[in-house]
Length: 224
Figure 1: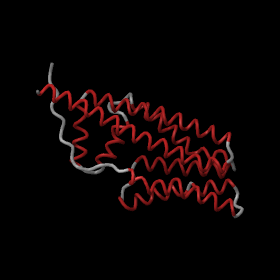
Figure 2: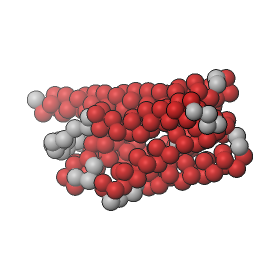
Figure 3: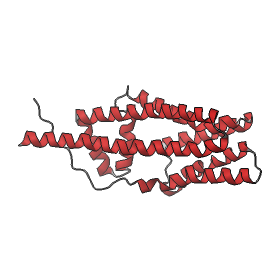
Figure 4: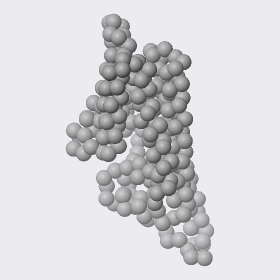
């Protein structure tokens, strides 16, 4: 049996959940606060929901101003927000304004599952952005891990879990908009979004680290 080459050394650097704080503020706290403030002063529910959707777009622009680079995923999010807001205002539908992000979530889930048919699944690239960013050394290290069958299987497994979870989350958010009043959905929706995201990130990190530890143990046993 051909022995696998040793894993490339991991460069320094770690993802921290504190990095998500600005996104939590712009995508959750500010929309909820804006909705409460605007409806409190008599603004219609539709306009209060639509106004809250401005803050995620502002966050994307904030990141672009800092990095001078607009990621394809951010561009897709902006497009969905713009189209969804326009349809909400034209139709006058509060329901559509509440669930427009669910369309994006469901689309992302389908893209995840569809990418399993490609050479490398979507989460390979998303996780690489988390752990490597624009650091060429860390990008090369991450790409080098693709040589290991357990790493490839783990990336596909993670991508499948993300795809299925986001499809379920989108359906659940649409159901909540049908059952609960708009004020409750405005609060519940970002809680679900970030709850699911944080849980997925935590599980993905733990799962990939466990896969790596098993591989390193196996290599150590073969070497001894």
